[in-house]
Length: 193
Image (cartoon, rainbow, N blue to C red; front, top):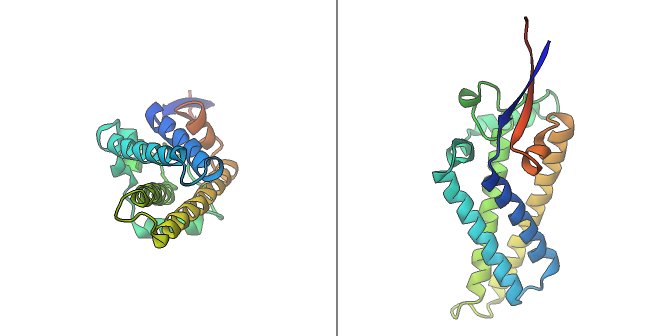
């Protein structure tokens, strides 16, 4: 017999931060012109959301904690080598096996991506802000750095979306739903009666 159970994963604040940052990045990269006040304000809003998310990672519920992002390089190598060959075990958000009583095969990869995206978002916002200061006003190297950071961030976002789609369709059919509509992941296990 099969049992289906739902378990909380991402809380509402984490999901809202994720999607507002995504929408604001699209606005900054594709819609508003660089140098405009609107571009500046969007950049500041992104930085504020990333900082709030990091603060939530220190003060929020266990499923949102930054401590869950800690991984070992050997775990990363192992996960990369198994990505195409073995199915990934079901997982709960960022919880470790001891917390979830199940394997957490994508945590090192997901953790690395989150840390990279947050760092790039903050560096991009910082370089944008610095361009408006008296000290760095008109500095071509800083403008080029800001553009390079934004383009690198765009490349990482493309990898993130590709990885999510790959995991969604090859390994875990509830991954996207857990970030869009609800904070639940379905688990199925055999029970005997």
